[in-house]
Image (cartoon, rainbow, N blue to C red; front, side, top):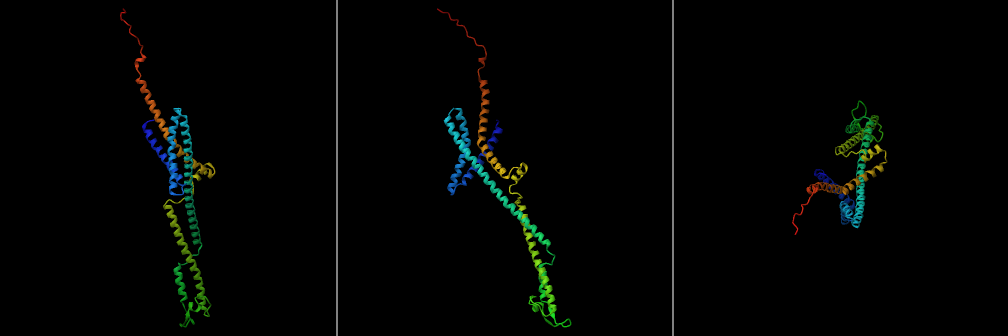
Length: 304
């Protein structure tokens, strides 16, 4: 494996190892009742996760050197660390998915409730009869109660006001004109109630529109609490609970496998690459004379 593939490979593996350590630390941290206990559990989980790739690097050479007891101890530790790390990753992923789905559910319910209230308010406002503004009707009511009543059409002498003669239209008067004005007053009172209700509905609609606009502008609009599960449920038809469990397992297994085996795979690939480079060099360094026929010089010394 060339350097341009190994360097980013090591970088990505160390990132996944850091993510795995963080997941184990956060999961263990949640077990502590006090701050000291939480740190103890968290550091224990992080340390166990750091041992996971190192134990694998010790296990294989121990088997190759036939140090079986050492390999067995490393294997037991590796199984223990991997089991805890996997369970921690699953727990961390499950808790975070549940919290995220819960927040989305609250946001989705709130958005749907606001839209429902907005639709109800608009429908009620549409059904109300069209009347004058409440302030105009109020002035008209006050003017009607202050209207004077005369003895006769020709006489300009007032016997009192409509409100004074009828107790603000709460009792009948012996003056017919005052009673007629009270009938008109009662009609205006109904219009005033309608106008006030219309103002309340308009204010409510304005507030609801502002809240919905704020939700849209801050990207808090969520139609579904878990859109990923909904999409996979529509594609596969599997139960939502099974899909949620599957997503949790896949995420945890992905992080733990890459963080545990990535360093071992890259280290073994480097060793094999170095071995392949050393072998041709050794063959070239072998003496070439060994391939040529050898002969010995005869002994020409005269024996005495």
